[in-house]
Length: 387
Length: 80
Image (tube, rainbow over all chains, first blue to last red):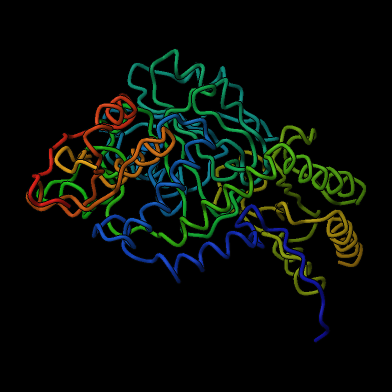
């Protein structure tokens, strides 16, 4: 088999490669500070706890959160969303969401339906765009939560989070944002955007390891959200009941200290490069791809035509060819790694009209180059021309 | 330094104690993270020890930023 360069364009699923500083931090933690953080009081345990404390402060600063103790570490955005959906909603409550959501929102919501919770899924356009006014119209006296993705993992469509936040703030309804795709990619300020609950993952645009993520909980809401997992926290050990204070209420069991050390460095990497500069680079790549795909007959790009309305995620279909076939040929023939199918978001694909066949998705990251995009375009063109 | 005036500041959790540590560090207030003395609590966590002369300053720095569970003076004879 000939050797060839692999081109990784699946950053929307998990960013790769990771910055050297992230890899070094994980290794250094395992070598030098892998005690149980804050459980034992000795110096190595405090050192491990300090890593987590630094990561908490970094995450808080990243999202404009004044008090770092409002940040809970979880294993991913999915766990964070499950804490909110399972912990906050009670029978009789009503929830508003969109028709562009990932299954990390839809599955726990549909399970909540079984417990007597009603759901309104606000329609989105064929490009995945949402009209904030439709959220306002869906509000009832029982609405207890609005949960919305910040950016679609299928089309990259950026949702009007700040506009929806203004509505939920006015109505006094908690607003939960799924920032799995956007954290590290778009600026997020929980106060300016009126976000009450922010679910983020570490392994995508924050360039941390898999198995790291978190949840911001606005002050006071923790009194209304039951924890998903209970157990040892290293605090209030004389009590056999779960502590009620932040963040321990939601952080039971030994955390992923080495992973969180990597997440801390990933956050620092993004901060040092600057979100705006990373976005400029990634959007330049996405624009080259969008323009190039537009010129290939039989290729249909989904999502908003204007690049500024997206994160660097581009989904397309090829007339008369399965998405999985295109992705397989990109990988097998050209070493280009992308993600075909439904992207764990059947609702979004129904909105786009691409259910059940799905799309081929390209997701760019900091380490991709214009040369890689040109190679990918040539590959798509050749696959389309030689079915 | 006069050890008689040593106190420990107690917090809800290790996360709170370490957040307090950052605030004291930023404010240039001398302090030390130590395990919670067993005669104060059987908890497995840590607390912050400060010399008496810095206690008030530390209290002011933490006010409104971290929840302090209590302050206990350490017995003279036992030193650290």
